[in-house]
Amino acid sequence: MNETNYDIAIIGGGPVGSALALALKDSPLKICVLEARPADTPSTDARALALSYGSRLLLDRLGVWHAIREVSPIRTIHISQKQSFGRALLRAKEMKVPELGYVLPYPALQDALTDALRGEAIETLYSASVTALESSDDQAVIRYRQGDAEYALRARLAVVADGGRLLAEKHPPAFRDYGQSAVIAHVTCTAPRADTAFERFTAQGPVALLPYMDGYEIVWTAPHDRAQEMLEWDDATFLTELHAHFGDRVGDFVSASKRSCFPLGLKKAPQQTPLPHVVLLGNAAQTMHPVAGQGFNLGLRDAWDLAQVILDATPATLGSDDMLAAYRADRRLDREAGIRFTDSLVRLFSNDLPLLGTTRAAALSALDCLPLAKKFVAKRMMFGANG
Image (cartoon, rainbow, N blue to C red; front, side):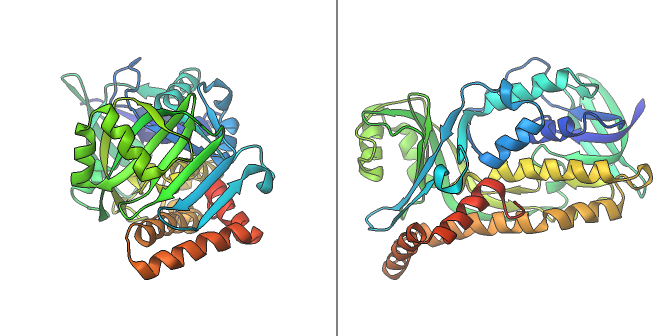
């Protein structure tokens, strides 16, 4: 079995792994990306991404923002609770930024990053199915298959950015099942509110409407059984039930695209991996509830900060315990704060306890009336705890 040596091997060519590779493009390091998809295969992921303004700035630094098409801005976020008087508005102009965030299809971001990588001296191994990850005191060893052939490569640092399945079997992450699934679809309505996103909390779970093109991308959370029922509804029933659940802030819902569904939970891998010279990134490190749209934005900040630590490292310390400890220390506050923020929102708002209902309503009203509190929440959503 032939083996090739690299400085850095990135397992997973999705947006987070690709962003890390692009952040290192001007370094003298020898880098490869292992991607399971065949070359020139477009992404079929149906999700819409909610990018924060801070993520837009990072993508601009990576030189890809200008190439992303089909982007819809978010300039206002309307937060409310069903059957409650409480509500809060976050506005970009109050935060002195042009937008709070953006909505775009996952494939649009993936394609822009993939195209940018093609023009760089970074090797991408397509159709590479990683079968094993091992490490010693001085390097990591990655074994993978391409077609019927088996290969191995060695790297001073292996970055797992593909979901972390390689390590999850032997070293399972902490996991919390929220008992909810998310149903996603694109809907149109009679009175869309331009540039306004809605986050509405209900006892079943939050429902988000993200402005996109001629309507909204919706993320409707519900108990698992209920979500499966929603997939079976015809369009008329789905739109009627959505209006009853969300209300009439955008008028009547008039059309819905094909719906898809995925379960929700909190997955948190140990920040320090059990293998030397290995680091987890993005969804491999943590997977969060989509409420407040923090997951991908946190992963992108992971990638950017890891790149800065790598660029500051000397050749002798690349992938060392000291280098990775510096990265963990740099990311700890942002990571823990992001996880606590989303987890607390789900636990606090996804129930119908009467006393909590009054408290939640008062909290939303207070948030709307206190500029410093509003600025704190908006800044966290845009830039994370380190922003």
